[in-house]
Image 1 (cartoon, helix red, strand yellow):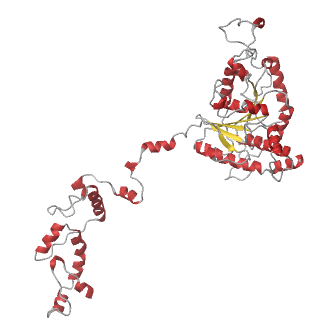
Image 2: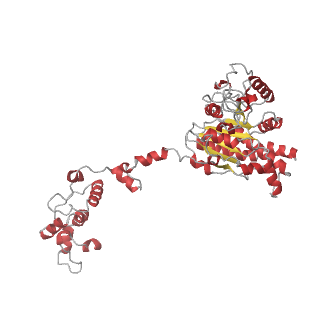
Image 3: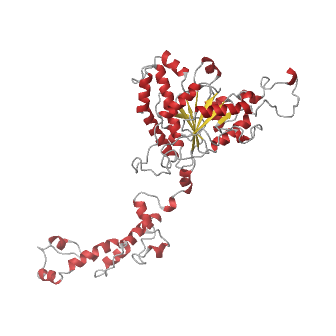
Length: 486
């Protein structure tokens, strides 16, 4: 009561202190007992008035009539509007004290826009459509391959930045012995042309000096993805003598679970093959000659230790429907590079198909299908049904013959100019370029089936492949096989 008695009254009136108040002051306070409550109601209104009206109220004999307080949203919008106008237009004393902003300044933003500002978010008009579309644009085009698994068999995460959240992706891997041309073949299938410099290939092949020393160019697993969303995986040579020589001569320390260097090299090869059989749609087995029984024995072993397809996380094991396959197996294509002209003979092709069919008779890999060279139209001696067992076999002539050098084209009569110089030369088989184009068409047209029981995007495939690689390295079947080898 004492605090409210000493507060100054509006309109310039002054209250006397309690000890100096004239007689009858108590009665006057009792008569005007409701006055302090009215004064407290007028206080925010007076502070909100412009300076011109405040001076007019001081000059008058009595207090100004109370003005109804404006709604809080209107005051907020007015304050932001005055800041946008530079603070002008609010000092005039002739107009109404608190006119609605829509009548004074035209259309104003609505309240939800200010709530977005208060949360630190831009208003809808400030969103850049170009920046929004940049999030959906394809990543930067790859110029060369990067590591998916390094030489120490460790997983690398650098490929994740080139992947998208879309499901239409094809994964193609390559296996083969040392020097068979895996890197060259994948480069030609991915982005390069035969006439280009090999040093510009996305998967760099062996340079001549390294080939002469018997060395290996690729270590681990290399990764490359095209703008057509096709992933190519190039691998180090399986059962490589160059890696074995490097382990022995450089005194590299072997992991404790491997006792001998040759056991470690074979286990690395099995890990890579089992990994490709799980995460690829198409696996190319590249070889530069045909009869290598040890290679087919290696394929059967890799299929035996292949990790099983993970079941869906939301379903228990064995709960999948009958229409959903329990295990996934990729398409296997036998690609023979540097094939000699006699290998393109229909009789020789039929023999090769029969041998491959018998060697892979007990395999679950999809080694038969639509990836054969019978329907290419480049071999007129192969009518439909002439090969019997339709094995995925494709022959490619030596790449060196594409340039048409002196050693590539036999001359009639042992010398002189060609008999028909205006016709393309015939060497007993089609040219390298058309055959390679047909192989590329067959591979890229392969069915992009589901690798697991759930549909995977590119980024999900990367995480799925990382989990499979970790499981392959910790596989109990591979550990038991390594113990038997040692």
